[in-house]
Picture 1: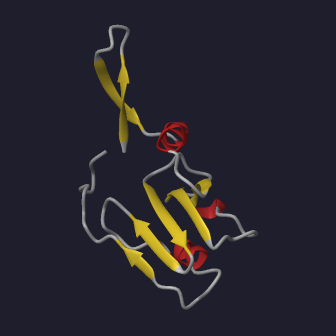
Picture 2: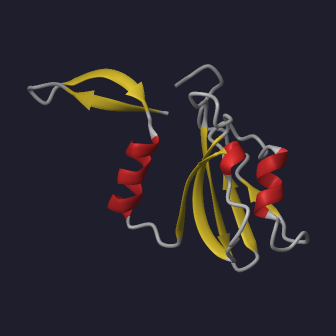
Length: 119
């Protein structure tokens, strides 16, 4: 995803990559409850897994610069996952989402809202 930066006159200029800082500001602005945090795929928390939480994950590893943002919501056994490409979560994220109860089903958004190769 990309965000628009404004110039001195408030004009929209070049698009820039959407950062974790941009996302944190949006979370605050939208007052998202039970927000767990923003993570890279390989830095998801190992402890204190909660029954109710919302998170944002970059599918790149922590050694990378970031590739693609996805999000999830866990609410008392119901798990929702959104990827703008309409893809399934990678195994690492699936394991995290089901870590409290392996029987929990992850509901996926298969609606594609972004094409590959787009920002």
